[in-house]
Length: 221
Length: 189
Image (cartoon, rainbow over all chains, first blue to last red):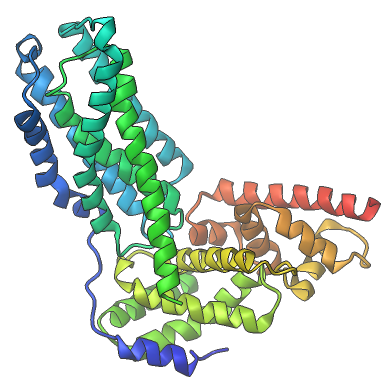
């Protein structure tokens, strides 16, 4: 079989318009910079800024959130790279991405708890976890949708992983704004509600990516 | 080595021309890569016509996502990445159809190589080998087949699969250990 079949040639010839190669994944991720900024200022603007922001000061509040948003963008870049055939992340790179994201969240939570400690009354503890979980998840949906739009034309070898990374990036970006609204710095609250929202977005991203792959496969038949 | 680099350079040039809308470049790519892809699919699909279909399908998928190739990166890992997706879809659709026959490894090539390399008796049943290969994780099977069936060096396998040299060696050697164990079981059973 040294020659393409007539059917394949016909399909290719029918749609042979010149295409521009996609730019590098990290540059494509930068397209989301305005969205990251919007989430950073939009979430506290819409829901209200955290009551104890003065205890944190400019750098620990806005600076750390900006750092988290940038980390989210970097993870989105990794997801976009994972989406290019044959360019999947090595297990080490994947482990570093996941571990550094978790470490960053942990460090930011710890620093915030040190400078602006808040003790939550037991009667509202569970309700606040659910409220923050809902708000954080909803805030991450636009970011996840934007990443899905960017990744639509890709063909990941591991759709589950590409999608989960996209969800993680979107979750980190959304949570960067969330921590400027939510004044509760208790690690349990942050882990359950904010971390939970990131986890939900990761699972949603993984399913979305898998679904997109199945749909494209079905459409291409 | 330099021949291979020249060939890689040619592939990149053809891919760039193809992205610019050159049909002749697409045909050149096909001529260069179709046989390699056929051998790649031989690791999991026995039926030659089905294998040819998968090669055609790979090029069709490649055509749909041709903008995802980023020059001047090597073309082969990208093409084989697409082929892995096509293979996965094929396996999934095959499972969904509930076929009773497993997709087998090409007996002639793989069985002869396994007999020679594992030192087992020449009467070793090809079905056993095919069954053993199927039970290996895809990444290990891929490395083993590329090395022992297609004769690629570990450096070439590492470049093609975009993994480290040590990882290529490790995957192939672990596949070999697993194959020996599985074939030993098959012969005892």
